[in-house]
Structure formats: structure tokens, C-alpha cells
Image (cartoon, rainbow, N blue to C red; front, side, top):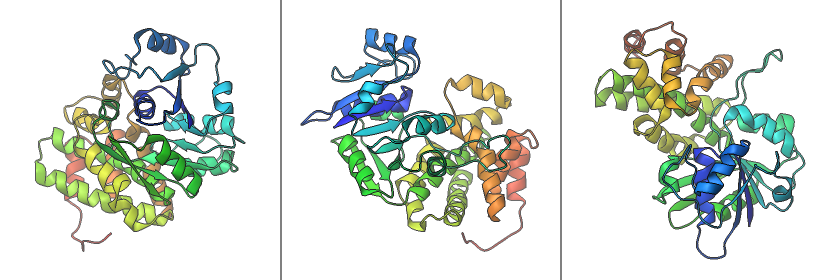
Length: 340
């Protein structure tokens, strides 16, 4: 299979590495970056020193971007196109790919920020695609995964979600191997909601850990956060069982507890007294939860869905609550039955 990965950040690079080193009949894998200087540096060093320093790129992995602003030749015979940009770049990529005959999948997790002037809330990936490229056969690859571990070949399981069997099969063929297990799922809505909301909840658990509130508090946040995620997902048309899988519970646990989690780190830094800008600047990478939290809450409000943890995160990010006040607001809520 000919695979083109658009975006050479940590996650796009890691998956391109994984696909290029699969045993058996080799895939033709092209990794494209918008930044020509980055491509030249990767060619020279045979590693992505900006995002995955110390991890060698397989000899079979092709690099593109320094000779052309768009990999038209590679895309012409691509059997699978993988968009590996942040959520803010997905709309533009799908517009450019509109009419492409082969499966297209994206890796980004979150809600697009609301667009000024159109009055619509921020959208999930499948909603963006329906608006700008309805003819594409698309899906999403998600699940509990840190790019560094995938690039090193450490065992990981992901979910390939799409309403189209052709897309699910292409993703499994492209990436399933000895160290990377790909499960198929037709509930793309649920997989996207899980990937978006878990980033917001990870900020809350990072805050909990940064304030040294203990493991009991962390477990409570993860469990009640999963309930919030599921409520929103069901309201948007997802299936409940999806949230007990890799893209729901699995990704939430990893992002809420893993030391490599950027969103968890944001919560920890806020707990230490840093401003939001200082916390974000210190990461050097995108923490999608910072940008999607407000849209998660906005969508929930429009649907009449109660999401108190997410509401608390937004109040914290907006500076309306200090870390200790956000915790007190959650703990001071009235008693209720344990339900979704």
C-alpha cells in the first residue's frame, strides 16, 4: 500500500515510522511536512530531531516537502492519506483533499474552535468533513498512545473508526503489526468524542496531582469524567459501549495519568501557580485540551448536558477560578445518585 502522512509532528512521524518498518511486503510510506527546513533537517539526520530526537527514521521512509509545497505526485497513487495536523489544520487539509478517491483518515483529537461570524459551535472532525468534503471516505485513528512509545516500537493498541469498511480495512492494513494492534470500530462519533473530552479531563487530573490531592481524588475524577464523556457522546449520536474501549476509557486513563501527557502537564503547571500562557509556552507542543475545553462545554450546554468537571476546567483556564477554588467547587456540589 502507498501511504501518505501529511504532517511531521511527533504523532505523524511516529505512525509513519511504524508503517515503514512493518515486516513482510513493505508499504511505500511518504511523510510530508509543510516546513521545508524541517524536511531538509530530517533528511540529513534521518530523524525528527524537533519532535522525536534520538529515534531513527527507517531507510524505507520517504520524506517530502522541501521540493514542493504539496505532495501532489505522492497523493496521486496513495491508497491511504493520513492527516496528522492539529485540529486547527484539519479543515484546510480536507478542503485540499476534497475529491480524493482513496480513504482519508485523521489523527487529531478535539473540537475545532468556533469560526467567527458563522454562529456555529466548534465541530468534531467528521462534522468538518461533512461540511467541506462530503464526498470523501474518511475515518479517524485514535486510542491510548504516546508518540515516543509508538516510534520506539513499544506495544500499543489503537482503534480505526469509520462508517466505511474500506477506510477501516485500509487503516488496519497500513498500521497493524507486531507492536501496533489496530481494532476496527464503526462508531466514529464516539471515538472522536472520547479523543476530544479526555484531553479536557486530563487537565483536571493534572491539577489534582499538582495539588497533591491523592490517588482517591484522581480515581474519582477519571470515573466521573468518563461519565461526562459518555453523556456528551450519547447526545451526539455515539454508542455507550465505545466509551468503555480504547478511545474512551483507555485514552482517558493514559492521558490522565501518564507522565508524557501534555494536557495533564498543563494542569500540574497551573497548580504550581503558572499562568496559562506560561504553562502552554513551556510545553513546546500543542495541548489540544486547552483549545477544545471551551467548545466541549459549549456543545454540552447547547445539548443540555451536565459536565461539571469540564466546566471547572474552563473556569480555571479563563482565570475565573484559582486551582483550589476549582476543586472546592466540584466537591461542594449537592449529593446525587451515581448515574451517567
